[in-house]
Image 1 (cartoon, rainbow, N blue to C red):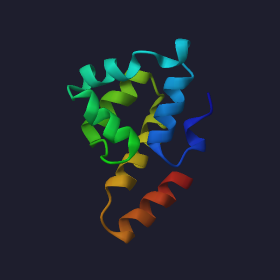
Image 2 (spheres, helix red, strand yellow):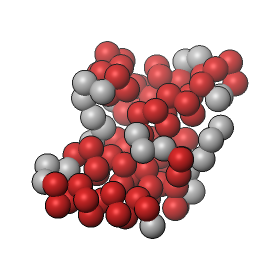
Image 3 (tube, rainbow, N blue to C red):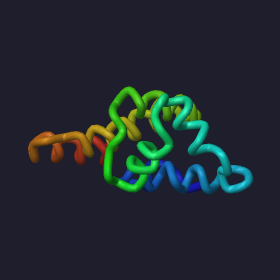
Length: 99
């Protein structure tokens, strides 16, 4: 599994993380949808880019997959970048990702 720090898209990281698990992650999406209390179709929409995780869901997921504190912070910034509405905030978050 590649380091999260090589990703600019949290969705790609999550898909790759699942694929790297035993049995290529069979059943993990179902577990996540139950854990996050969302319909599997909503999780599918999130992972396909039609919707996005909110910060609460992102927090729960990063805890569930066992990210370190620094990895979790990076993951959170990736979600914030997706949720950002202004170009100033997006630029700030991109700089934060670099550090």
